Image (tube, rainbow, N blue to C red):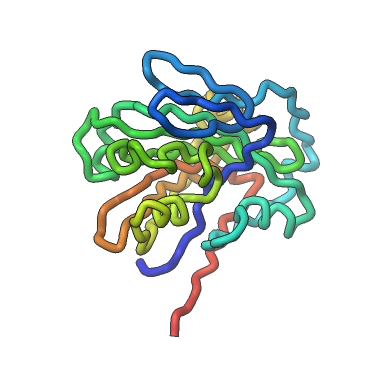
Length: 233
């Protein structure tokens, strides 16, 4: 698969930056950071969100998946449909990889990863969830170890990896329908067991090494998935 697919885990860094010197790196964003048992955690904002509007739930959002070297694809897609795009994130820097994630990243089960969870918002309402995993040994000790922290915060997988000399050659996405879990339904403001599109996305270096994998969840009633595939001549 040779298409370039957009990183869906870009961040905004809303609010003040907080400096964390635990491993000699980084600004953490968004609003608060704590250290617990040697792990760096980025806490999401605790702002109240409007409840889903039944009329809004019936409107379809088009998410065009594409690579954007400058700016966030999610914001651009929301702007295209007249909405304000934003997101919140939380990062745990040293999380043992579960079996499925380890297989997708080509590492041993239990090896440490950087895990970042995202809630993507349109006009303040949650419309998409994402959980991103990166091998810790790939970025440990660099300025890009935290996807939403440091000078490359919110730059996306492709640009962050380029900053440490790794060229991302392609990405693979595997979408499939399923029912939302209770937690997903609560976060997205949808009915329990409502249909969602679950996308497993993995970025690969030009040498074939997986450098990031993510689970993306989109409510089927809210969004349709549209892929924009560049043609190289």
